[in-house]
Image (cartoon, rainbow, N blue to C red; front, side, top):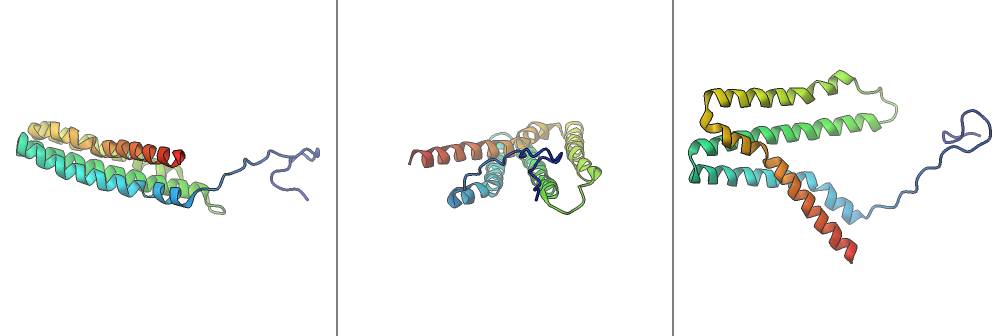
Length: 161
């Protein structure tokens, strides 16, 4: 009887061996699976605090620009996460038809087109909001970097014990 790993040309040679997978620590898996929620919470906290600080220190326009930029970046981050989950889920699901390329290819550039359009409108119509808007766009990135540092520290502590 042949298996999918056997050589399909029938010369009797075995096919490639599967790599041995090490079992995943359940506590580690739980901690890592919470990363997305932690990133969202930190991004929201940074957005609220940053908007208030910008409004109090600079102007209400800076605070509003930061809030709009953070909101757009937050929506983009959530949309990217959901699209990626759907794409990976469809790719690894067995027995289903392969994903249609257009269904997954269209939303990716659409997100950036929306961000560029909003930035253009803010730049042309409300130039006082623009700097805050640009700062707001990077807040989910800062939250993601913070999560990476957090997980690195947690994993290094676990490895030391």
